[in-house]
Length: 369
Picture 1: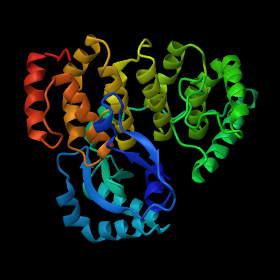
Picture 2: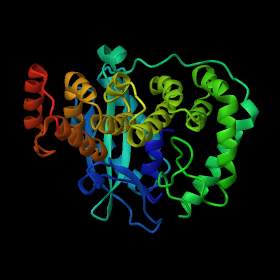
Picture 3: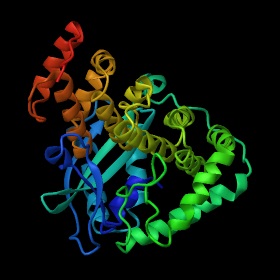
């Protein structure tokens, strides 16, 4: 079941995305924040389509309006049957419009003290499959767990999520010895794992990298990504994690991009291959696009040649993200465009950004701000 659906069904799960952080801190992208479980039930705030010029909200509501309204109502009420209805609607849309894929991304955010929900129908046209969804072949092997390290990670993650649910741990807020650690190790129940992971990554780094490429279980590959972040050499981390950006499962891609966000933000001396990250700005999953945009934001703060590459290759993708209803994508893409252009056009001025990107694509000039 897609992670995005869980957020929709469990309306009071307490995990949301703060899409306003960039307004307060210009060097920080939208981040994950947590609200207490007593937060009010969210309200539905918007719907859009990404990946097709044929489809938009008007077209969807004309053909599937009754079903979509029912799905939204059930989701906000926490009805467990929401996921089945979600899949049926997506399948019907895929069939009717002859699409390669159609899946819903449903994300919950904090806006002005309210919990709000936005839904994006992520579609891939058949003609765009190789360009937008050219992922690695699904591996078939089941490799052994090196030193029991994967099992240790799964135990750590289960314990940490339990602590998150009761407010004892906050996601992505603690420093640690790794290049990325989603839950940290300061809580007494999590402390022992830091040494285990540091020593395990050092001893079994090659085995973890092999798992990432060859093991057929997405949850195992996803764990391997996070464990590789405990290697001491950042360049090696990037080298071994980058293939996972094109993993066939969004869970694994999500984990890889999370690691790259922290490296791009806190370790600008470590090069991150910008080409692959820019390609991810157009991936089929809203989660992929949001995290890729965060990586690109921090890369845009760096070397002029990186910004020039973005000017040459990323502008149409960034304009598409600015037009999204998803706040994290919109806010981050807007910040990148402002950085590249030196202009202060509003995020809502889609035509203005589109006009600028076309001219910039011809002149290829990058702001030195």
